[in-house]
Length: 359
Ligand SMILES: Nc1ncnc2c1ncn2[C@@H]1O[C@H](COP(=O)(O)OP(=O)(O)OP(=O)(O)O)[C@@H](O)[C@H]1O
Ligand SMILES: [Mg+2]
Image (cartoon, rainbow, N blue to C red; front, side, top):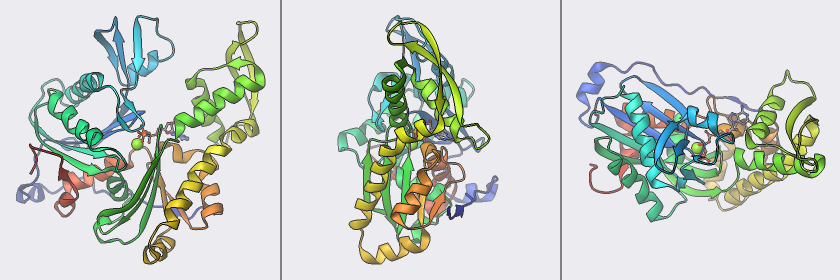
């Protein structure tokens, strides 16, 4: 049984007085979750979260011709002189130049063209090297977005806050964030991370598995977008048991239609569910016993877009044998947590400076 859905409980309005009295807050602030697949930007002045594909389209190796969702439209369809890429890989910055271009474009879009000085709160995965961590700071500093202050927040901490948990006063919270390239498994307690592990499994790996299975079984080459659409379609309870897909036949090289059934797709994802569940067990085995008792009481918190993949939560509950809570808004959880840090003075201490400009 799925334990239930927690409500993320963020008031939509902050009292002007509260902003005024809190010296740590700039009225112009952004919280950024640089996901491998989706970038999420919380804008304090509009109090909204913008979600876009974290993707850039570059023509002739020099000109950005599209970014975000419009670049994604071109993905797997563009001619050779247009490269459409994700500048983040496995949760860290893989292509800093293109990521700078993208950040500048997104922030300019948020500010409707006129870039004003602002504070930036960036979510950073725990399980990365110092150099990778530092790259997040350099990115914001060098992107030409007039950063006044650059603060980091551990991604898992932001997840916890975004799930509606009072992270500073809770003991033993297990958060599993299943994203695109990565799954981050973390044990939080009293505002800090006790244990954390990042594994390279997520929606992208699920899609890859479907692409390979279809190729093996049906001699059909399909794109990653098709694989994702297949997953999504079967996740919809109102969908039937079969689905038509289109791709290229390996033998003839011609376009071809095939029918996929639900069970075939579920079977191709099983091994990845297994990996996630096994890694959660490994983390639990290393958890101090007092915290284990708290985790048992609270249940496990599942978030990240790909946590919605059908069967994953059930598998987790059956194998780990603790109740599973699924986030209300799995794609946005980290950004919701950053919003809490930005808006609420009691959570401000959860942000820290990476270097230089911060407090
Ligand atoms: N309803 C859904 N069912 C299954 N998967 C979904 C659903 N909605 C989104 N996803 C998957 O979630 C993934 C994106 O999630 P998310 O935005 O959390 O990743 P990310 O933060 O960009 O990646 P990462 O955290 O690995 O850097 C995609 O693989 C997408 O297919
Ligand atoms: Mg993510």
